[in-house]
Image 1 (tube, one colour):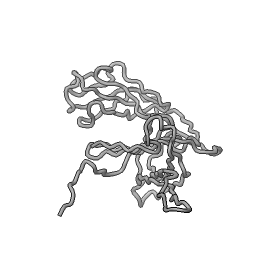
Image 2: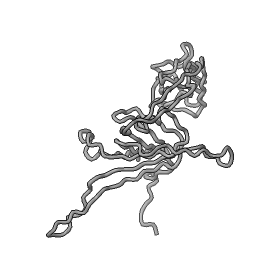
Image 3: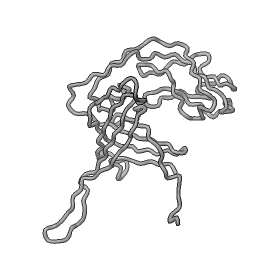
Image 4: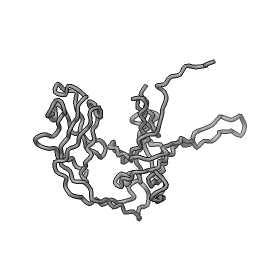
Length: 270
């Protein structure tokens, strides 16, 4: 006999997107595909027992969290942030790609949702939209910037959002974006010589049945070096990966923002 009633809206299914931001910044960078995302909250506690009386109970001396994630798609510039800026990155620009056309399929976009440019400048600057036909809808034709679409930056990536304007009458059409960009020919990460890894922020985001759950850790440090296993060319379908580990501590500066929000915040859409 059932003793309670199920509430499917409270379930969290699947893994999470892992993002990092420099401490004090709200610009987030995606660490990409991977596996084994997980975190554990911990307490350093002590029982308070007087010499002449009964125990006064447990006191929390410290509260912390540990996070680990196996990275499959290393972006060296993002890893620099994730490792607390103990590294340096050198970007070499490649050859300009002029008049690139990115086609977003019908059903592959929606109003006011970020459409990332598949081509990004190595410098991190905004790609240059075509002057004549920057964004063309398959049914509605040319779209106007500011009225029908906007160019936006999400984390380190540039893209557009399409507005629910008078011109854009249906989602059942392709969106073609035409722009020029210069990708990176190579990125070099160098390391060695730093004393202490700096702090960063870390965010885990899960979407289940259209509902978003986010864990935001306010003050974290990388706690492990690279350990990369180079798999055989055949015999495994998994990419070469490596573990990132983070130790999160309380950020006392957040007392001015919200009470009892020093370690992490858990946001969940119902």
